[in-house]
Structures are given as structure tokens and as C-alpha cells.
Length: 548
Image (cartoon, rainbow, N blue to C red; front, side, top):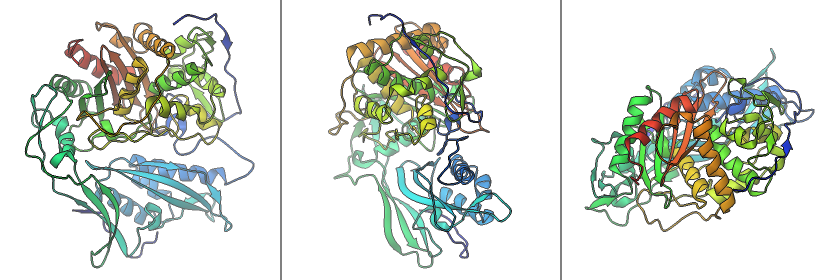
């Protein structure tokens, strides 16, 4: 049993076309910040930075709200608390709330702020709280900010900011139902255990009794009596009947062992995770995390996918013939869209083709093409063709992605390179890769034969051919050259995802070879090729090409 922690009673709360030229166009002037392809990527956490408006809430207040949510989500609780009117209490409550309910790394997504009649600024937001081994608790809340006498803005501290039902008389408690870890076997009938494959411990726990997965509830209780007043969230479905047999999974012991060894040897102590799955049917072959215990970030994590998202952005552009691989799309060092974006190491490729922009992961080129897509188009393509954001029935608890409509041009620019408020994880990006190179979305599964599946539309064969060719070129001539010595028809896309101004970037790499798609993320990995590249290389080098 876990509780949200003590809160002081005094607290309140194919055929090549002739080249055509598509030039990058600069927008309004903004402030400099790196744009390299994650949650606060391109300096875009819940809000765009360096923007201004002649109407609406004071940008300084909006910036303070963004900084508070960024700090809270990143676990920088002293800094978050320091932005409130009651730093001591705020720090204690935020810490107790997270640890008491086994919450991992929250995802906090703000919506449009508004000015109140009393001069305060109100910022609603959606909180997605990952509960270890259970799933994600999603709810809506809001914060308000007041201008201080000495200047500047502070978040008005109240308990209800954390959750609307948290108060001086009520708090939350996490109750976990007892479930036995079942005996499990891989796709070939080989026994699987957490002892032999440590990363599978949380996965096997989620398979649970009768395959229903772990179960639990978050309850609102009276602080004084402990009596339950209501159930706020329920995780896991109660099994019709427990099973005494062995749960057969789609996992492959060979892939699983190679995945865990790759992380052990090359993650360098950083948080990292990867997923490998079959392209032809979505069956998951390996799920691995470093560290191996605790939160299963490989399938339940919430990350901005960085430039690996350019696979979907390219799909959207190619679907409507807005660009072709041989078209010239200039790749300058900088491009200003409400704020200044630039490429990794401020690289530039003048008169580059769109293919070159893809293989070198040019942010400015992709951002310059934002006018070719409607505001909802990127999300529509992700959902309609790739199943991202639909409800997936994998067999264990997963986070299935989010592609919100951008609020403004700056956020739309960030979305083109997998930043802003776009959220994914290795499971999602492995599936995206499989869909891109096969043309057909297959519901990812760890148990096989799911009755419920997302509904999607196949990609046209021409688009699939173009995506495969560009991903292959990324290995032979681009940012995924680290994989070029591996045998087979292998393609990939790297991604570098900014987390915040003062933290190293996350590194991403997605790849396909034969009938297998792989996605890997390394937190604080700096670059995708440099951090995720060695892990994926180790994995693919250890498993035969035809092993799927």
C-alpha cells in the first residue's frame, strides 16, 4: 500500500521527378535555442519560448508556468517549488505525491492559458502520471499565477494544483492487488524468467494471473480516518479465472538476450530502452530496459521522438506530393519561426535534396516545409496510417502516443521535427518503422491474436518505396553510418531530442532489417548515432538476419 504522502494541515492548494526548389522561409524574430529533434524539444515544453503577443496573458507569466511544469515533469522539484508562493510546502507535497504513489516521470501538457478578471493568469493542463508496473493515471488540473509586488510572477500554491481532489482533508492511496507472476514461454516454447532476463521482470508481472496483468487502484481517502471516499483510477482488468498453465508470449529468447546484453554493454549507466518487433505481424520479440527493474519505459515511457518522427513527417509530405526525394529543399544553419531553430552542431547543407535533408536529419529544411501541411495533418497521418494515438491492446500496459494539434506556428515548426508536445516511446517508434517499410500497420502484441486492434489505412506502395530508400541512404550515406558494416538490407533514422535547456539531449535510433524493426532511446544520450547507435549495432550483430 502506498500513499501520496504527508501534507502539512496548514497547506492549501520509386521514379525520380525533375528537381524543383523549395526554399526555407524565415518567420518572425525570436530568441536563440537549440532545436535538435523531445518533450521540451526545441525549447518547447508546454509552451513556445521567445514568442510575444499584443493580447492575452503576460508572456512572463506563461513562461513561469511553463518552467514550473517543465521542472515538475523532469523531477527538479526544488526548482519547481521555488517558482511558487510557498516553496517549502510545495517541495514536500510534490515529492510525497510522486514517491507515495509510485509515479515515474510525469508528462504535463498545458493548454491555452487565460487571464482572469482579478489579474491572475490561469493555465489548465493535462497530467499523465505513470504508475510503476500498472499504467498511466491521466487527469486534468490547472494552476494560477499572480504578479508579485517586487515584480515577476509566481505560481499560486494550492494542493488542488497537484490534483483537483487533493486537499487538507483528503489524500490519495495506491492499492495493488496481489497477482502471481505466471510461468511464461517465448514463441518457441522456451521458458522465460526474470532471473535469466532481468528486463522481463516488469513485463512478466504485467502478464499477471490469467493474463489480465497487474491490478490496482488509486483511492481518495479521508486523511483522519483512512476511509475510502472514492476510487480515482483503476488499473488492469480482473481475470475471469486464474491460470495454472504457462503463458505463451511472442517474445524470442535469442532477441531478448541480445537486447539486454546490448543495453548492459553500451548504455553506459544511462536510462535506456528498446523494443524489437516483427514487421509482418507486429509481434514483439524483445523488450529491454536499463536499469532492468522498475518502470517499463520501453512501452510506457513518454518521450518526444525527435528526428525519428521525420519518418511520419516525410510520409505526410510524400502522401500529398508536397515534396519528392530529389526536390531541392535548402538546409540553412538557422531558421526563425517565432524563435530560432538550428541543426545539430549548426550544420548546413546548401541546395540539398529532400533525400539529403532526411539522411542528414536537417531540422531547418523540414521546418521550412510546414506550410505544406495543415495544422491537423501530421496528427491525422500518424493516427490514420500508423495507429499512433489510437488505443492499442498489446497484452500489457502501454502508452500509445499523442500528437496534439499545434497551438501556433512555433509549435507546428517543432512538431515537424518530433518535438513540441508529440509523445512516443520505443514500442511506438518500432511500430512506426515497421509500418513505414511494409506499408501496413500491425497491432503490436506480446501475447498474439489480440481481438481488438487499431483501425488504419495502408500507405501507398510509392510512399513505402520512397521511405525505404531514404532510410537505407541514412545508413549508407547519412547519420546512421554506424550501422553500415552490418550485413543485409538495413535502413534507419537517427534522432536527437532536446529535453530542457540544462539537460543533455535524449538519443534515438530506429532501424529495420529483414522482418524486424527496432527502436531505441537513451536518456541524456546527447546524439542518436552516438548513444543509441552502438546499442542497436550490438543487437543486430548478435542475431542472425533471418531470425524473426
